[in-house]
Amino acid sequence: MSEPQPFWVYPAELPPPPPKFQHKAGRPLLLVLLTVVTTTYFVGLEYSFAILLILGAHEFGHYFACRWHNVDCTLPFFLPAPLPMTGTFGAVIRILEPFPSRRALFDIGVAGPLAGFITLIPFLIIGISLSTVDVVPEGGFGIWLGEPVLFKWIARQIHGPLLEGTDIFIHPLGYAAWFGMLATALNLLPFGQLDGGHIAYAVLGPRARYLSIATLGLVIALAFLTESWIVMALMLSAMAWFMGYRHPAPLDDHTPLTPGRVLVALLALAMLIGCFTPEPITITF
Image (cartoon, rainbow, N blue to C red; front, side):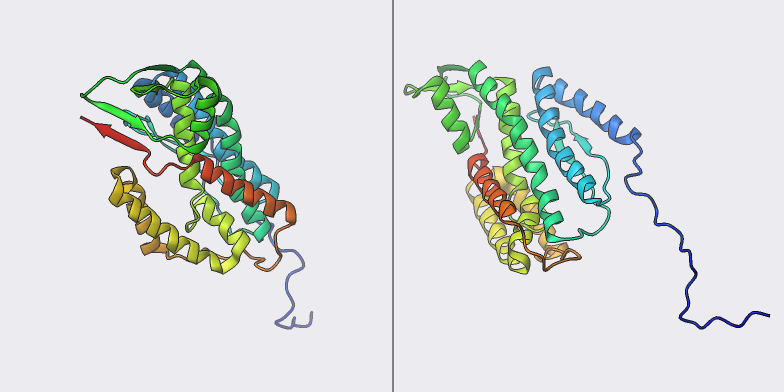
């Protein structure tokens, strides 16, 4: 007869943890196909090709950074939408477990905007090159796109100073790049659990909540200046109401970022400045 085991003795073999990255590709693939349909139908095939590459690069940047740090996540989900100007709400990816460290949090947060930004640059240059400069018709209905700093600089290098009464009529490839720049700027806002919020917490720690508060105030102020920011102001307000301003701490909240990562954080700030426009869309009648 064996002696009874003391209560602190555990079995020699524990069941292995469930495997990570167990993806079912059916739903993501269906959403990709639906997004191809909506973006092509509402904006055109050239735009559809470019915007899916830009959004896909952004989300797969997050995905491969998750694989690198062994942080379980889903495949990217594209979001088709019956919207005349975009045909999509963008794309998302779900992180399925806590971030193990500030460094992992930073890498995963910055990888998406960085990959998307690198992908959109060729489309921006080619799209502006294929765009035409023409006289702006007086009166009537018109949709005017705000010009981020980077957009203005590239347009000036390609088309030179514009004559009074003229403007650039953007090619679909350029419009896809412009939309990608808008998505990049919105994601890089240092708020909550947006990509910019991940980056801010990785750099500043719990003090990042003050940036979240300031960002919400800025977006609400912009919403009073232009209707373009109303949806974003409502979304951030809802996030602040339900989740607060504090970013969840990673498991290792003490190991600081490497100097190289700090430099990449400054690059992310430059990307935000280059892609940001205070008045993205103006509609005239």
